[in-house]
Length: 540
DNA sequence: AAGACTGTTT
Image 1: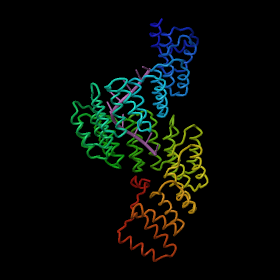
Image 2: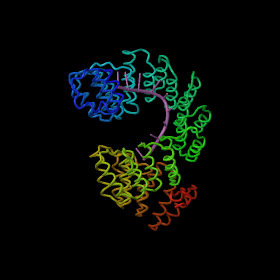
Image 3: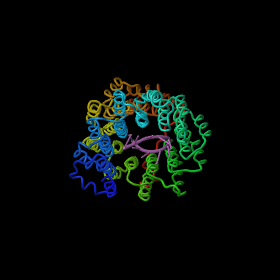
Image 4: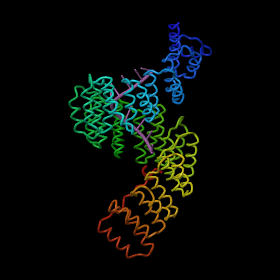
């Protein structure tokens, strides 16, 4: 019977058609059928089978069912089953932990792991690597030394490559180079990936010399080793050293190319990023993928070149790059930053699924292009369709309100940010609100907000106030704001031109002359400004 | 049932 099922399982539709009434199936057969449904992502049919055979379920059946739900992203249902399970094994726990990790829920992983330990369950190698990788860059990273102790005491004094890598990455994240290298020394049968992790770890902590020393000492190197070194230099803003590594590499893959291109883009060196991308296309051996195109689109957005952006968009189609949520979001962002809001909307609406970043890009695009009402509309649609806004959403939204003169709307959202969504207002949110009040001429409110906010004002906040004072010719507050800026950074060129304008309007010509004198003496130059309107070589 | 070293977006 089992053999027959296995053979039939190769025909994708057969088993799903037979599941309408399959009672009293023996356990091995049930598990085999569940596995089949798992592999073709038919969790509903699997569930029907599962429900129809309560007496033949083994722990494995439950585990398989939970894995099916996690595979299709139904964390809630997986969790329910997990809670209902009469007896769990280590596989059940690992499956659940892995699902929580995939859904980016480090807190859930933490709770689940602690619970597992409390009940007295023994984690295994898989548990450790899942848990450690889930808590990286979160407050739960404190688990790493504890897991290490547990590993040494209860599992094995020497970690294998998987556990070793996980612990090394964890210690690198904690900024503990000594612990990291000690783990490395203790790994049984170190392989090239252990060495790579060591290079990356030192680079992440800023020990570039040590990383290079390790790199040179490696018994064997692969593309990943080279790319780790390259990426490390970029991480430490040593872009030229990164390029040297790139040039010396014997073998390059799409990851190496993308890392180097993106390194230029992130360091504002858009020209070299673009040049390298062209070189990549010309050399024709390694085709770019969605990672590469996202970086290149970011470069186009960075120089607000719609023409370049359109060319890249064409390239994406020409290369047949499959739909990807991040890539589409990059397109939305590029079009928005290049001033083509309509194109941004077209790309956005064509996206089959949108995530938080996609919504933020679009709302930010509306805000930048003076479509405040549209930004608000999109925000409503976002929340109605079940995407929870974050702090970036609100920066964009408040910015839109400020520039659209929508004071009450801005106040309403600033308020709901904390009360409804539990997001604490950051300095940037306060800056938006100061700007909002300032632009609306409510200088007193702007001033009061600066006074009560729980941060020291930065240049942006003072600048918003100063700009407003300039707009509404307020001498006293303007001087106050200028003092604020001076305390942070002595000669910000904008101070002088703004101050002299305010003083001039008030007829305080002696102050103006004095200011002009200071400007001359300090050789203050006006900041050069560029407009994105002309950056397509006058095309518009 | 499941894990590791290099690349993307606000």
